[in-house]
Image (tube, rainbow, N blue to C red; front, top):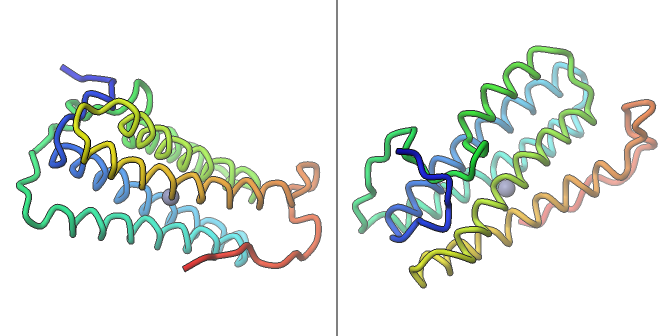
Length: 178
Ligand code: ZN
């Protein structure tokens, strides 16, 4: 049975299996968005998405490091403890549909923001509710980083004029901390 409660994740192995799935999916999503923005001749936003894809790669690498000495459980797609409606797969299907239409940069950034908030909410719920101290600690770190990514996208959105769906002016590229 599927369990829509991230806070029921009770072991480090189970948490890492979820985090890996989420970060792989997220990196893939960003590369699609980056490709889409390149096609639209918007290299600046394509670059922002490439950056966020690399951040997801880094997260996945960190998770793999943590997982080196731990046997990760095999989880069937329907047994992941994503919040209701929050599974990466469900969102992927939904977003592929949207990607098939011409997307403005604003729509692309909104989609990316939705992605980040989904990740942040997942980690935050685990951090708040898992019975395992180490799981809560790891999830809290991830939640904090996802919050930073969401902030980056929100700042970028704030610089755009929704009527023109184009950057208002050529502002400095977003801060990209290493
Ligand atoms: Zn992120």
